Image (cartoon, rainbow, N blue to C red; front, top):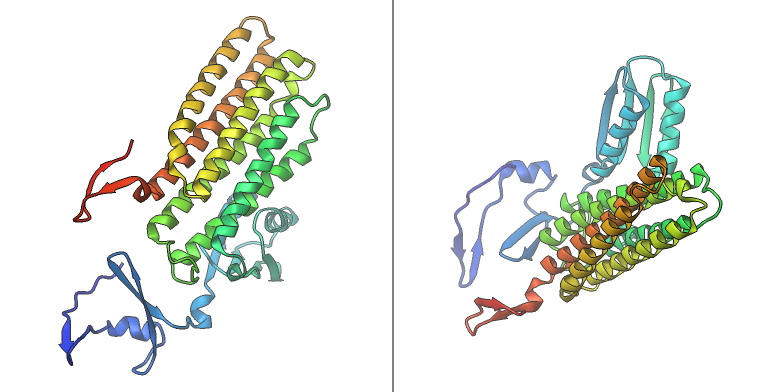
Length: 348
C-alpha cells in the first residue's frame, strides 16, 4: 500500500484543500475536471472516482498450468473467483485432457455461481463471471448463507433418525450448496473492500466487513459439520435409543445456531451469555452421552457416534462465536458514557 503525506492548505474563508498524487489520478483515468467522491467513515476520508472505468471494473486473472491435478486447478479457479476477478484465463502447457475439462465444468456448475466458459481450445479455457453482485445487496447475500446452513443443519438432525441410508449424491449436493453461497459471499465482500462495489447501508464500515468475513467462514464450517453428521449416521441405523438421544442433542445445537444468527442479523448482543451457557451445557451432555456407550458398542459404531457428537458440539461452539461477533459489532449499544462522551464502564 502506497502512502502519501500532504499538507493542508487554507483558501477563501472556510475551505481546506489537499492535493492528490498525480500517479493515482492518472491511474484512475482522471483529469483536472473530473469529479471524485469523498466518503466520511469514522475518522477517515475515502476518495474515489465517481465512475469506475469498465477496464477497472473487469479484473482479469491469467493462470499458467502445467501438471497440476484437477483439485489443484479447482483451488486456483476458486481463489481467483473469490478475490473478485471477472475473467479467468487458464493456460495449459499441454493439451487439456477430458478429465481436466470435465472437472472444470463441474466446478463452475456446482461451486462458483455465475461463471461460464466463454471460449476454449486444446490449451486454453476462458471463464467469465456473468453474475452481477450489484443486483443483490450484501445483507441479502449474508442472510441467504445463514438460511442455507440452517436448512442443512435441520436436514442433518432429521437424517439421524431416518431408517434408510441417505444417498451420497444428495449429501454432496448439500455440501455444494453451502460452498456456492459461501464463495459468492466472499467474492462480494472482496469487491466491496476494493471499492468496486458500493454499499447502500452507510453503517457498513471496514470493521463490519471484517465481521461479515468472519461470520461467513463460521457459517461455512458449520455447514461442513452438518454434512459430516449426515455422512456418519449410517452406522447408527437400527439403534433407535442412540438415534433419539443424538437427534435431541442435534436439535439443541440447531436452536443455538438459530438464536446466534438472529442475534447477529438483528444486532442484539445481549444473548451471548445465554448462548454461552447453553453451549456449555450441550458440551457436557455430549460428553456424558458418549461416555455412556463406551464399552457397549461395536468399535465402528462407537467411532461414528463420536464423529457425529463432535460435529454437533462444533456447530454449537461455532454458533457461540457468531453470538460473540454480534456483541463485538453492537458493543456501543451497551456502553455507558459520561457527559464528556468517554466510556466509563459496561452494563452487566
